[in-house]
Length: 166
Length: 218
Image (cartoon, rainbow over all chains, first blue to last red):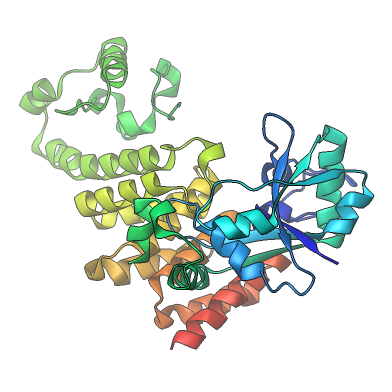
């Protein structure tokens, strides 16, 4: 039972909430769709996380290492089989990033997405998935560990991110 | 990108940043020696002409001493607020992503250096009422905690703990993340109180995570 990870913002996934009195019963607010914004060819970048989640921190590290400075990292995690169960295609798709091996092994795109698919994915994350947080000090440690072990190539990091590590 | 004061307002909706809430006969338009943009300068001059406002030089010649003192104490505060709003609107909403808000950090650092405490006072005031985009405020508060400025650490800790009482959950979250950056265990009592009163279940969990992190450091 592998999982799919997508970078997210935990504050987008809070409903029903006293802070959303305007939201009609049974409706989804638009906010979580900001975390599943597809590319121009209707694909969504995701990372495969193994059944035992043994590569979870490495995936967190590679995504966070692509940023301009270190910050906390929120992510949504949902079972891969549940996404496939919606009839949605998932395609292995390595991309340029600071940890090329991780990208080769675990980066995927959810492809040929429709608006209906996106709605179903949001509902699925909300009902069966998890949206978790890694605080900044841990993210920083993960990136450092990745560089020390040679998994993350410092030459592929933005200078501002390297500066924020020092 | 539109800022709240980029366009010339009508007479009935004068921007408080321009008028400063002064009686009309005392209204002034501050023209900076180094205007950030020609359109803003033009808008300021157009507004001055539209309102029939006297130049500050002319006002100063005829104004009573008390008025001159008022103006000199209000102007830095207005400038601090204007600078803060500039920072909070420097990135479009879609660019406000974790790890991607360097411009906000640069703005916070520059203006804290320039304006000092009034800048932080304005930040907490706007944060409490959420008078700016909540996500921008969240990132501004994180940067406030992130700055490497030991001289202002107590003021920044105070601002961040006060912002834990903001109306917006996004802003309260940003304040707690700023406290992680600050890494000061002295704020733990305020954070624990914030956990106790937090009604939002997932945010309460996040605040508790911050408490546990700071406890582990102390």
